Amino acid sequence: MAGMCESCKKEAATFHLTNLTREGQKEEQHLCEGCAIEQGLIQVQKPAYAHEVLENFMKSAKGDAASMANAVCETCGISYLEFRNQGLLGCPDDYDVFREMLLPLLERAHEATHHTGKAPRSLGTGRTSQQQIQQLKRKLADAVAAEDYERAAELRDRIDKLEL
Amino acid sequence: MSASLEDVIRNRCEWLRGEGPLSEIVISTRIRLARNIRGFPFLPRADADLRAQVADTVETTIRRTDLLADYLHLSIDELDDLDRRVLVERQLISRQHAEGSGTRRVAFDPGGSCSLMINEEDHVRVQVMRSGMQLDAAWEQINAVDDALDAKLDFAYHAQFGYLTACPTNVGTGIRVSVMLHLPALRITNELDKVGQAAKDMKLAIRGLWGEGTEALGDFFQISNQITLGRSEEELIDDFHRTVIPQIVEYEQQARQALTAKRLHALDDKVYRAMGGLQSARLMSSTEAMQCLSHLRMGLNIGRIKTIDLNTVNDLFIQTQPGHLQKLHGGRLNGEQRSIARAALIRSKLHQN
Image (cartoon, rainbow over all chains, first blue to last red; front, side, top):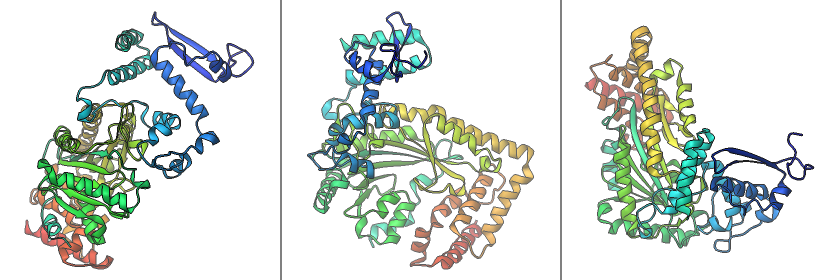
């Protein structure tokens, strides 16, 4: 039946993954949250963008759980709840302390979670390979969305090379 | 009252020069960068002492930077509300900066094309303004100012998230690109929804003349990016350059051409009523003045009126604002007095031509 988890066939499928196979074919997976976690999908070698999408989704699902809302930054003393109420963070460290909750928020606001662009001169003026990878991953996501699988396969190969 | 501010008011606004590419429709271009200094909390968690330390650190850096050495410095918290208002009207500071609390400052170049807000929402917000469509020039200038600050300040920067800002909506590049457009014909032909759609397609926001939460007075609209993370500064600027602005400019040009070709009487009616009102009114609100000046500006740009200089109209846009009006008058005025002074100022300027 449509909407059921392909693995346990008991729970409703809440994870809908569209992967790109090595041959450039679309491959769909529909799992319930439990099976997705059980299968350790996060650790499995997947095309990088899908890996990220899943990771973000997992985190946003856990998102605003009560324990997270009470998380407090030791540097500035702000709690996650205070941040959500006022909309402003307390110090630069908050981006790491509240990272899990911020990622889905950034994804919604910017449709991205990695900076590509200018960096302080002390870090070197050129784009780091990490930034290049992120930029290519965005292009890959665009290509997949546009169903341009030839370009997607080509981008995936370039990402693979950079990630070696 | 600072002597330097008196001088500022007499000068023409850089962004209202009426020059630069596409200046008939693109009034001005603005880019700002948000930066915070490593080692300090963001402002919501900074007490009075830390705020003052941040302000002193930034101000000292500006004074010791060759590129910024001749900038004027003002303490916003020591200015009266009229002076603050003048700075907002010239877009040297935001309304938020004017209305905030605690130690906060501004430094700007004598020409008023670049300003640095200290302790606004972030420790430093640099902005550069240019008349007309000059995104590349604006980016070049602000990038150089940012480099100069970067050489002396350790900005909060994260390997994944880029430049860290108090609000996650600005994180990454910390950039806000804003282009101010004059779209009177699209308002008359009732086609402004086209502009909304073009902006929405590119995930851009549309605001009124003075930024967030302001009305689109006098047919002026600001278009700005909302995404700051995951795209480079150049990519974000490119969207404006290649796609959005040329498209909207074309819509406005088409609307102007259509009005001229098919509904000249309707167009002329707007232009000459505006002219008549401006030259004759004895009481004029700032809203009415903006609307009339907008139509008059359009009349000049499409050649329906040739007896008035565009600079006169551009100057009136700023001089008729409540802050400037009272400063030029030499003291505080109530609402009705302002309307009288505004109408008199406009009449005198337009009859000089």
